[in-house]
Image: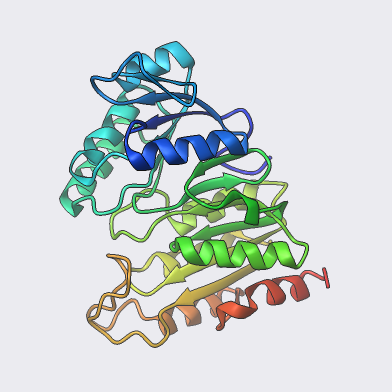
Length: 293
């Protein structure tokens, strides 16, 4: 089963005629994803590698029955692009764009809560989502992933790739890998995705990758403690990060003494999660724990 995307997902790409949009739309299609449409205002009638381009998401959905949007629109317009996708009936929006103003995302989140509480947003500032062998909706290198039973949810794109590669090298694969992004205001959280993996029969174990800043990892720990019986592993980036200094992502900052890696690791350990302190041993630790070595 996996979660969020599979071979039946029909993807449209907003911003498909731009450099990033056209490249990654083509890569997703080559992976086997059903990329059925692209959207760029004023460029209807064109095509990108055989993918038809429409002026609006509404037109694209009407003509192709797309149910997922992959967004590469520039930051100043990305919030509006998310809203346009939701208004057109898109059920899953994956926003790759980095640098969207926090105020814009706060408005988007409020709009979703009031009008589309069941719709799902991944990102922004994320690598996307992949169900190996079925669908890639994002920018990740598809060849390092392998079909398997480990569900991955991560704030870091690069660490998602590293962890997935290690699991693949140990003969394990991924049911679905979800990069939720590192911005302070974003869509699905660790807890949301872990709840999906917990209900997915194909997912036998869960790997969570977090980082300093915010309280998302602590909230996930509380959920795991109460609801999850599957093995859960975690790595938290930023163990040596000094307070007050942003480390990479906009949301990765220790503020007022809160959001430290140590506090998150302790909360996860108390929830029964196996916490891995060195990213070089993620694959080995998971493989040993579930008896695949």
